[in-house]
Image (cartoon, rainbow, N blue to C red; front, side, top):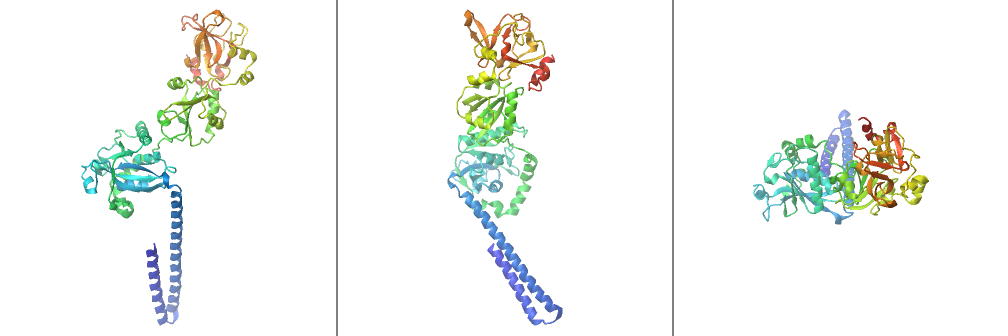
Length: 504
């Protein structure tokens, strides 16, 4: 920069002296006025250029000092990542352009020889690849972000090289140093495969870190040293056009984004401190309220919440012993359970539960149950009582609709399966969903019966004397444990999925 400034000073001084000599020899009229004006303009232009150059220099120094101070904040936490994607000139410039990448250096990666030079590697016989070592600040840019950036610079289906460069030294590979890095690379590769972005298979290698050799000095910072030649190469090789046409609108899944659907990939795709599965059902009004509340909250970065479809995820319900929708299960990245609970009001509540093992069965305290239930409801649900026959709400109800759990709204039975058993209690041939109730042996009252429960509270009993043309079962249920939702209200109360029962 000082050389440029000195050049302008010299030019301005020579021009000024020339005009000064001309002024001394000419003392009349227009020419004198002209030389005086030119002298003035020369001085103004000179000082203007000098001011601009000084301003540029000052702000460049300040910007560099700012970045250096940010980098110098914690020099002990730098990490290194290793990639190969064809010509290392292109790789180096892309990663160097990332703010929180401190340096990208061209290397020869993974060969069989105990040394490497460009002359050796360019033959294609050493099994080295042209690649780079990326030094970065993991507190500012993650390894996952570097890997995702890598994928979006290459053709991962090319097994012969990259674009204009062919040969084993130009094939693509990612070199991992830890099992965590390997997992991230494999997850992003699987995401690409599942996205059906490419018709041909992805052939990029995933290789453990081994021996590496730095490339010669003239290969380092090539895009800066030979900017014109580099830009012509990047365009002429076809790399730039491929990136523009293939990767322009592609987005990797953001593992931080609420609201994600559950997938094994999402569970293992990041170094989350807490992972919570939210068992959600579209017909569940409590679930809808929770979802609405969560969607208006700012989920902190350390917390990943995944939405699990309660109706279809029977394997997960069984694995984590989830008995009701609106259940929350905290797991680790390997899927091991850390804790579980049912229902909560807001994001603060869910954070209170994290890593505190709680059973899903302890939903309410006794005081809460007594506040929610009438004395007869409490007697039936909690004390295993039985209401009188022919003197209850639904024994002779014949309206279309469904019967839900009086406490939490879990759908239990449908009017399409209801029949008159003559016993004086609501009777059904089957539950609306097999997994919403449990059965167990009941030997009270000196007889063996099969008790029907919803979670931990008593509903009634099931017998084998039901209609023979409809499964032969009779679910004899107390009206006190049920709430009837008419067909006309199903959509409004989020039970719309059961409208299909009344179209048959």
